[in-house]
Amino acid sequence: DWSSDVCSSDLSAQALRARRRFHRGLKRKPWALIKKLRKAKKTCPEGEKPEAVRTHLRNNHVTPEMVGSIVGIYNGKVFNLVEIKAEMIGHFLGEFPITYKPVKH
Image 1 (cartoon, one colour):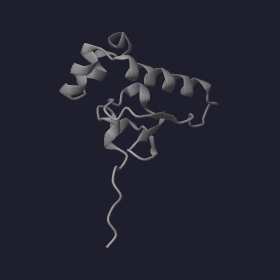
Image 2 (cartoon, one colour):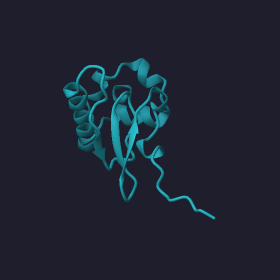
Image 3 (cartoon, helix red, strand yellow):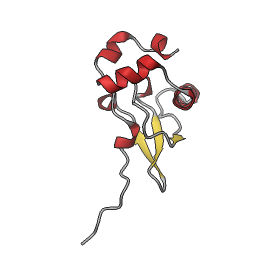
Image 4 (cartoon, helix red, strand yellow):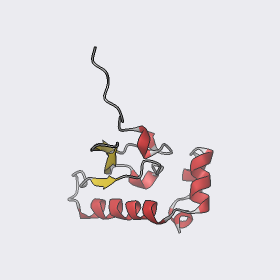
């Protein structure tokens, strides 16, 4: 259960939408992403960045447990690698990779 993994102080700092989602529980796919990120962090050597975990879950919230991980987020064409930082907590994963090609005039 997700509520036992995240302390209440972490949830109180997040937006209402994120708190509601965690209160109602994580489904199978977001939970699988968390497990893959845990495994990648555990298997990497000390002091190095973990291996990137690729995902299509753009609607997943960034949690404090994800900080320091590298996630490949699908933008519709390719997987953009994003390193999760503390300032990203509470935002959606889909907010970080750009989904369009800027116009060159």
